Image 1 (cartoon, rainbow, N blue to C red):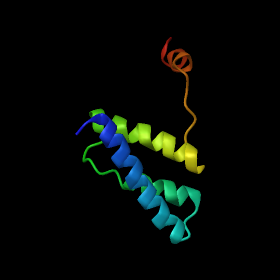
Image 2 (image 1 turned 120 degrees about the vertical axis):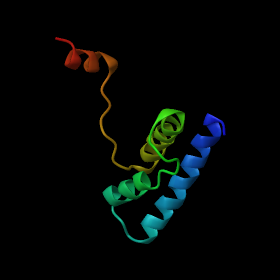
Image 3 (image 1 turned 60 degrees about the horizontal axis):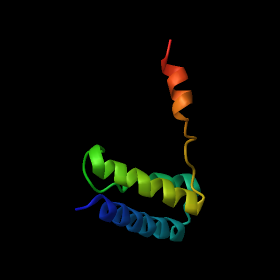
Amino acid sequence: MSDLSRVKLAYQLMQTVYQEAVADGDNEKAIARRIDRSYPWGPRAHWPYKAWLAARREFFEAHGLPLRMRRSIKESLSVTSP
């Protein structure tokens, strides 16, 4: 399976879970948890997980779901450097 098709599949899965959660009356945090629990590819590692995260970021931004703030590379370096 290609990375692009994993991203598409992940986005479609998130859409399905989102629609079910909205129909159940879940709030944004609960919807985000349901989506996160629906990860379909075993261990969260390597390219399948990166494809999931790419789809997740776009989906969460498009649907107003809570995302953690991203740190820039520069900010990350200043935290880990002595």
